[in-house]
Length: 182
Figure (spheres, rainbow, N blue to C red):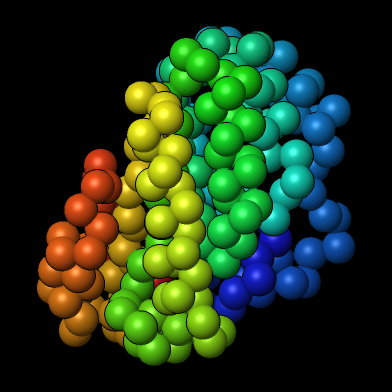
């Protein structure tokens, strides 16, 4: 429940900023996992999930306790090295798991930065993509995709974003388009 961005379309950042409770601990996650039956797919959301240093441990808990076969984790891609390190650990420690990383992209260049309300985010998307692309060569159980949130701030550029993805990120596995809530 932490994020370093304050995206214009985000419905969640105010509760994150005003929360005094904090995040649940690994022990609490372990108890939750142990109370659940086996299931196939785990989606870990945020905020920005890669802020948590223990993200690989969280995935491993569900991998060991609940026999998950797939995990999807979205990222705003602003921590390229953390994304790379955590992804490498998840793939190495959970060899029977298919891991799908979804990079958020809500515009091109300064339009993306403006939606995210932070300069330089688009450049980090490109850096993160290049770093994780190398892992696709090493791991057959790794997919990389893009998630576009369609909102008033991005809808006019949606086709340009899709075209850019097709032309510049050709080794991706999926593109998801989410409609903003509210």
